[in-house]
Image (cartoon, rainbow over all chains, first blue to last red; front, side, top):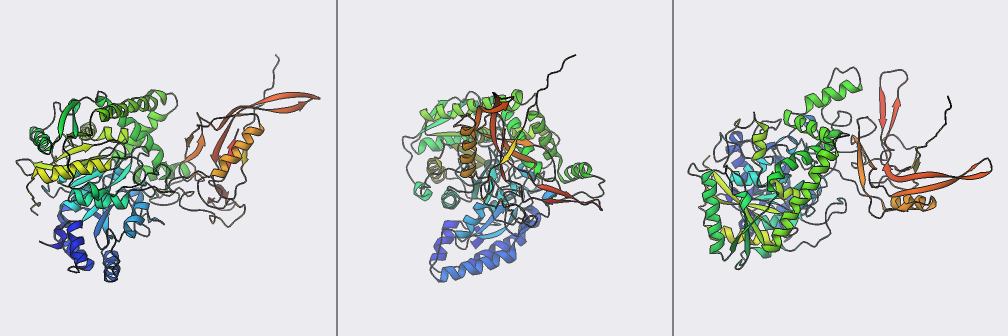
Length: 485
Length: 153
């Protein structure tokens, strides 16, 4: 086994025993990157010099017996979190040269925990997309089939973990952008409860939906990352003052007697038959673990995509107003006056999908339409959230497919935005309700493409998610495969 | 034809706190351009506002002084427009759910006391300042003033 193939907890044991150094681990990761990165394109920017310097510091710490939760572990960061002194592009031309003067809170936390940053991972532009095809820097390819998308918008963060180009990574999830690529790339991805992880330094897409979360190779690693990421931040007024439990305590615990809700609205026409079969297999595994599967209903599910595609673009249209060429980023040249500078900068700096959503959002918020669109969508959103509140009175966990299909081909859905939007159909309600969700690998298609199962829990019940995900992972006996690159 | 003159005033008053409404920067007047700034009031990507408690207290004092009803639950709203002195592309203000409402002030008119309605008091942030070069086609943006706390009534 190569060092880059191991998990955080496996590497921690080796580090503690003095068997490996962070420098060795980091070099192993970078030689893997040399091997495969050209074919996959997980990264917008690699940080090799910074990583080796951080690894050297980690090795000093290890020598002095100062071993913290992530000391010496190479981690990738979706290029949507601000890193001081290192370009942060959001996958966009309009920020192609933006160098933040500060670190995001999660970057500070990971750094304080001893992590070594490998690079900034590729993503759909401004997190708007489900395939990483809208990145200004070119698409990322799925390591399991290079002709296919890895999912999005955190595509690069998912592929970097799947292809061992880092040990763990950070992504963001607004409508499924961690869970969907996790499922399509065969890794674990968790979106925390809204308010569990600080958004300070996360370049905003939709402020009431965005959350930062980890991608890992297994559930125990996910718990390790959550311990570092979660917690109140005085600089972030929507982060909640709630104690962070030790998430590792939920690993390898029993789930007998747990009620697992199977929502009928998530098991309808249009799901790929191989995905259906894998999910049914997952339900059997849960029963094997002692879980009691019960039928539940989330009656307002059918409105979730429509509600999301009013609320998210509306919030984005406001959040992206600051990209105007005045203070930082791309500024168009040859303009004759201020208005023309604004117009040209935003026309040239933003890609098509971003412009599409800004227009939808601006329209939905405009005078005369605000109540009919944003107002109405907010009301339906409350009903979607209420569906979950009521469901969680009947069950501990909800189980659903993460995606309706396995990874589709590059270019397959780019001509039809609505088709693309539907790939988030099972993940979107989670963000609208603010509850946490995790995607865990549950099988492969005959063609060798990964399939994920999604577990959802009530607000701030990440512990429960990790508990069932861990039990599932142990008992599902999914064949351990690596993408053949 | 007879016309009746009705005059309404929209008054913006600076609340004299030491620091800005959403960040720790100094509100002191007259510093070197862009010296009382930080990523938050500069509207850098990824930053978030944190409300200054003193601002709420001062606004409440004004509300009490003008016989307003104070709304314990009130919210901020974004006023979106593009201008170089507005770094976020929106001003954080209040709209549908202001801090205080239904107040009044007494004014002296021809020896009589007249009640003048003060419909609402909003908390909001100030924008920056543009300095136009008289001789060249340039304008300079000084963002020291962005985020200075104001009431609007």
